Length: 288
Image 1 (cartoon, rainbow, N blue to C red):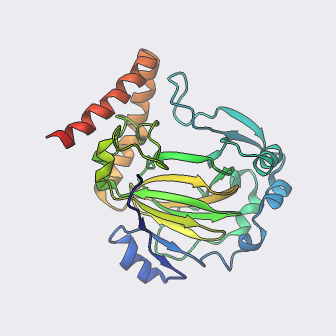
Image 2 (cartoon, rainbow, N blue to C red; image 1 turned 60 degrees about the horizontal axis):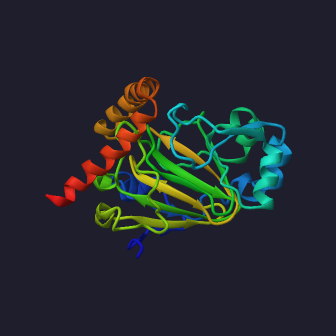
């Protein structure tokens, strides 16, 4: 048994006025299919080009191993030259991913390949983040720590995005003091007997092809799976809702610091405790 997905709405193109009216203000996701067709990146961004302009750069790599108390949040498990990593992606399946990496700061040439989209959002021009993954690899279900409005552009392949609205957070088996849920939940093949609260969520799905953009509103959960080797770029804008903005500040400056301190003090027991609390707190909602 799988989720009863709703397809994310699609448009070919859109004006800033309509984007704000129909998607940002109501906080509704959308795929814009042709938004990058006038970017140099639309023609240029493939793996050979990345090797050409960034092949000598050392990049941080991540996998989906369970959280390790000895590591800080978002600490990479390995590093590799970009050219070696791209070769690995193209030669065989791998779960090693580049996650939330500002390659543009090291390769300014890439900044000339895209345009800041005119969608009425105050986007951070200094924070275009890149993500790379091999066929079958996935990015665990989470929401962004800053609860930003996210524009997610995909290139060089296909990617499946499963997204869940923030109002369903109470059913997501969220780990306390984090922005992730239980890492042993398989969102490709959910076990509703083990995770019964998931039957209450309202997930949406979008399969992105080269050049397409997914808009993810503030605080939406997202799980990404690379159907083929590919890479993506995200642009972000501050949360507009005061509640989300204050939560973002708390997450970045207090929650993350507290969690790192508790890992040092309690070690693996802290990770186990949080995982257990995620189950008991969530299941209480459906047994009342």
